[in-house]
Amino acid sequence: MKSTQMMKKLQKGFTLIELMIVVAIIGILAAVALPQYSNYTSRTKAAGAMAELDSLKLSIAECYQADGAWTNCTQMGSGSIPQMATTKFILAPLPAISATGAITSATTAATDAAGANLLVTSITPSAVSGQANMIWTTLGSLCNPTRGLKPGQGGCL
Image (spheres, rainbow, N blue to C red):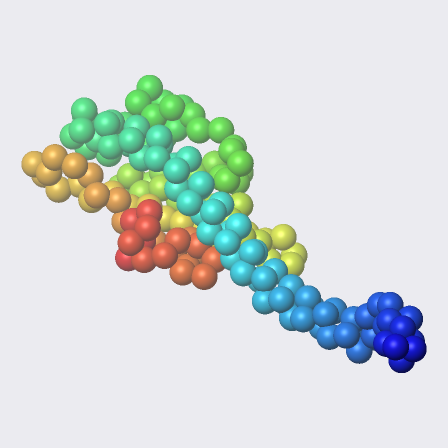
């Protein structure tokens, strides 16, 4: 009887080794979770950038359908293509539109230690005569399965 009371008095908390094991387990979980979370947020921003570029893609497609050529469809702020503002996921300088309707843009999806943008994109339309819809192909570092869009998402091959 006296020995069980003694044991209860001796064991009132965790031992140092038990606490160290718990801290080690938490450290391992954090080391795995933080890079995964960073990749997750980067992919979310990449998807957001593609969503913000959808209105510009639509304007370019409508302009091309109306004019039948890229002549009036390459300058934002002109009558056919509205001016796009810097957004949460699209960086300045604003997206550029080439003479073939391709959109080049820098996103906020990922940056390196120096703050340089890592995920840029070039979205190219297919303009086939008599084609009812315009198919957009996305190229660039935005199509990165780890930090950006996976194949099949946002026009990435």
